[in-house]
Image (cartoon, rainbow, N blue to C red; front, side, top):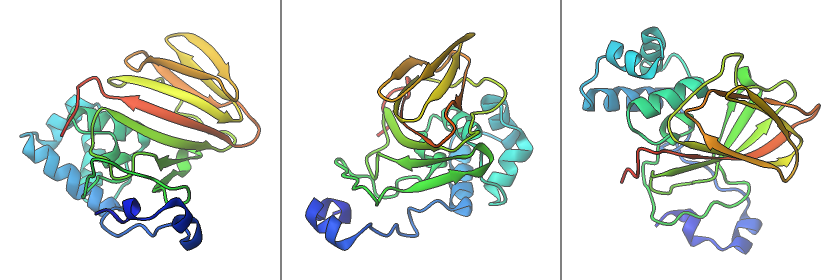
Length: 214
C-alpha cells in the first residue's frame, strides 16, 4: 500500500512532509528513458515524433539523452502526441499507480520552471493516469506561458486562489482575480501571464479528450 494512504492527517502533521522516493522524483534521465520507451512502443522515430508533436527533433534527442528538461509547452505536446497522460513529463510518471490517492499538504511533488518563473505541484499523487490532471501553480512576478499562443488537446480549467492572471483565448482577453475561474477548449489558441505584482497561485485542471488510459 502506498505510504501516503496509511497515514492519518494528524500523523502527517506530526511527522511532517513525506520524502519523495528516487523512483518518483523528477529526474531528467528517468524522463528521457521513459520518453524513448514510449516513442519506440508506438513505432515512432525521433523525426516522426517531432512531426506529430511539433517539438524539434533536436530537443527530443536532448530530452531522451538526459541533457534537457522539456519546457511545459513541449511536455504537453509530447504527451499528447504519444497519447500519454500529461504528468509523465511535467513532473513524474507514476511507477506505482493507486486507485485512490491522498496527497497531504507539504508532501506534493513539485517541479520548477525557472524560464517561466513558475512552479507546479502535483495534486494527483499516485492516482492511476487517466482523464484529469490537476496542478497547483505558483506564478512569480513576470511569469507567462510564452510570447506565442499554444494549443493542445482537451479542455483546461483555471481557478485563481490568490493574485491575478491574464488569459488571452482565441483573440479575447480576461483578467481573473481570487475566486474567478475560466474553462475552455484548449484546442483554442491561448496564453496566460501573471497579472499581479506578487505571486499568483492557481489551480489548473486539464482534461484529455482522448479518453482514459488505464
